[in-house]
Image (tube, rainbow, N blue to C red; front, side):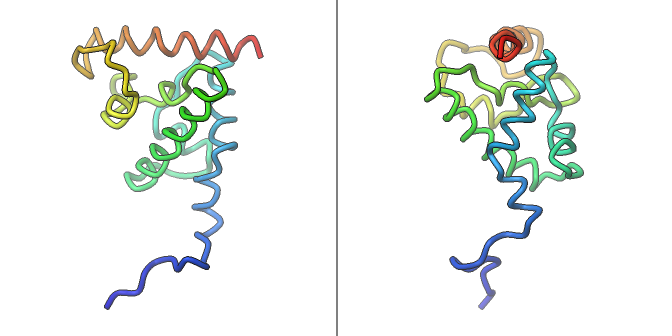
Length: 131
């Protein structure tokens, strides 16, 4: 039988703990919002001290869901919308399925999706530039 990677008493390595440091990730995204710039998944991981990998990206996406839930509770605009694919400046499918917003019924890529994302990003940029 395979031994579990982490027992209930064990903590992940310092590197993974950093990746899951919600406050650190929030700070990176708030700083990006203040400058009016979206970040690619790779840039976001780089700011956290990591090279891009799919497992790290998936871990980041889990953290982004929590960050948006916290923002909603605080009456702040979402920040996960600032993390986008480098290829088209649009968040990945996980963002679209997590946002639970039935107002947008279009495709998750292309000009219409990009326009929708830019509007949502503008809310975060405006809010955090004033902070």
